Length: 215
Image 1 (cartoon, rainbow, N blue to C red):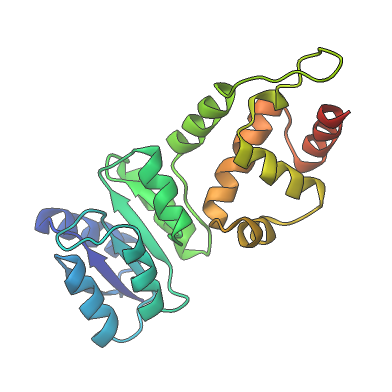
Image 2 (image 1 turned 60 degrees about the horizontal axis):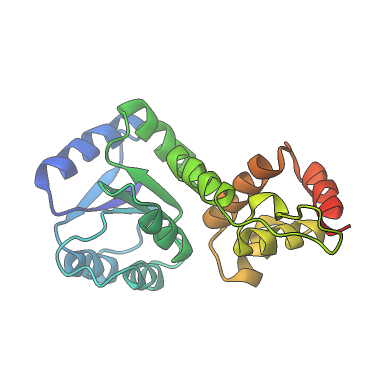
């Protein structure tokens, strides 16, 4: 396995490399301290199996930088490992194609679990992002139907209602992501928030609840 680590803190890169060596003892590591160095390695360093990178490193152009990395390494998972736990940063990274977002404050156990999930083809979303998404949905304004009854859409945001409409149509997370211009990770955040807001545990129950909302 060949891994590119992009972070402007040498100490963190060394710590992350040692952690990854526990998962893949035979891995080859390439390091970069600026975003420009990340791009350069993506251009001349051959194909990587995964790219792990921080946000806001020197020369960071914004979230479009994730697209640049993906264009140079097509199909390669790009995982953000950042000190920021802001929901906007998490959503921004996932919306721009990141296949995971791991806060630097995560414990070693959590970080290893997250990396294992990504290496096995999954998408890691920090639990705090799910909690924040649910809180935002619960704070959404309520609305009333023609009969005066409360039709708040159970506190769902406009985007979550769009995702719910897709669920009613039987669409997969991948299809929803494509139609709404989101990443699958962001769709998962919305779906989890929808389940919590509706008080349901699966898609079938969510569709039933959505039908009740529309009646």
